[in-house]
Amino acid sequence: METKEMEKDLTRLKGRLERIYGKEGALGILPSLIRLLEFYKGRVVERQGGWSEKDSFLITYADSIVDDESPIRSLHQFLNFRVGDVISFVHLLPFYPYTSDDGFSVVDFREIREDLGSWEDVEAMAEDFRLVFDAVINHVSASSPYMEGFCSGDERYEDFFVSLDPETDTSSVLRTRNLPLFHPYDTCRGKEWLWTTFSEDQIDLNYANPRVLLEVLDILLFFTVKGASMIRLDAIPYLWKELGTSCAHLPETHEIIKLIRDVYDSVAPHVLLLTETNVPHRENISYFGDKGDEAQMIYNFSLPPLIVWSLLKGDASILTKWAAGLEFISPTATYLNITATHDGIGMRPTEGILSEDERAELVQMSYDRGGDMTGKRNSDGSVSPYELNLSYFDAVNDPSSSDPEDLQVKKFLLSQAIPMALMGIPGIYIHSLLGSRNDLEGMKMSGRARSINRSQLQLQELSLELDEPESLRGQVLRGYSRLLSQRQKQRAFHPDSPQKILDLGPSFFAVHRGAGGADHEVLALHNVSGKEQELELSGWTVDLLDDEFTAGSVVEMTPYQVRWLRRSG
Image (cartoon, rainbow, N blue to C red; front, side):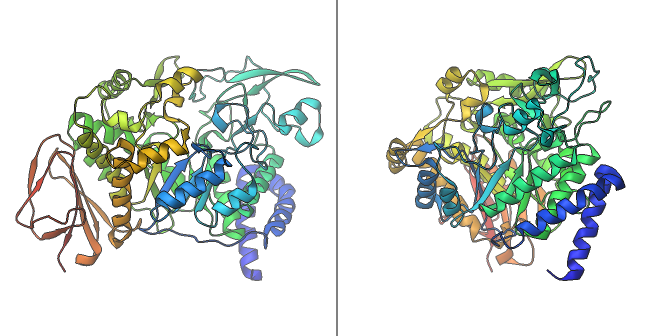
């Protein structure tokens, strides 16, 4: 790196540290940070960066699909065979040793669970896919070496966690779980009460201690050496603690994310940051930073519940109004457009968009379809919906419905086509890709609501289903692959391509993408109603999804049909 570039990087990093720790604190940590950067420079393999219309993003556990081989190796082979030509990013949910919360209570970030495979398996997968690693850096397991060192009096881990009097007033703190904020732990100094945002087994790190930040940066750079092309920052809004505040979205948290971005820009500029911020939309987009200097990507968390609402009511009016407000941020910042993840369907992102009665109707829908609802405790002691727990297929299709299966598949694929049409990159959960329904038995056995959408599938049985053309899974995967394959061919679907939301009436969700002529524009139409519809449109003569489309002044659409229209050129 050129000397001037190095000086510019160091000046920027020093400024970030000063805003977090003050001038004196920054001077204390800066030499160690410089040594860390120098250590990793040259060790990181440069990989593909940026994004295009050819990108899509798969979310999966390393052992979502298993057979007699290493799960990571089996997943790699399965994805190569089934979707290797249409999936580019693969988000491997936490694959480190853990003690609870399906991987999100990490014991050791530098190890892989023995039952999943090895780092060699991960590095091999990184040759075929752009891998996304989970950085669960808000908290660690109560069984982690950090916690063991803290409790035993190891000075290296002094102040690694937030210890407070249990009578401390924390009523202003935003809570996402109906659990105590503090839990007691036995240490060599006696009993100490430590901050636990999520559970007794997930103890929050103390970022007011610069050594914590250095350790986390070391881990994040280690991930890139092992093949990460993107880092997902889990539960990132709650990183910084300051009594008397909500302890969410604080300025120091944003500065730490920007610092992480600066570190990667210096050492591994191909690596992208994705923030997991399941919060109202205005707070969510704040993680893009100032003109795109923070995360390059955020989840479009309002999208999943609004699509469900549109299909539940056969009316896309609210979705249309909300989507019209989505703005282009910068060429280095975009949305991850999801419908489902390993968690539930977030309800906080509907605040201010849906009324309380409408939100309550969604909750009741989840219960009626065999699902559940996870609540969050408010500062006044009340509980409000945090997420709906059910598979996205069953959120779209009532399991008790008598609708033909092919119509249910069509309706579901419409829900998945909407994220593909919007500005950004489509994010696909493995159980959506495979058309999974509610795992009621899994939820019952685990006692956790989120298990309803986290089934583990046997490869041999799954393969037989996928090879059966008329099976539910076969229909869904085939339809998904067709959509993704066609999307890759259209420059109009580049994440940065211009977007305009059209209001064509409540039965339709319509997106115009691109500019500059027939070859660079697509009009995506979605009939969210269960009825045949007609639209008066002229000039759109080709349907990329229907070879039998007949152009005319009127476009006909069957129930839940998707059309990607292009002008003849």
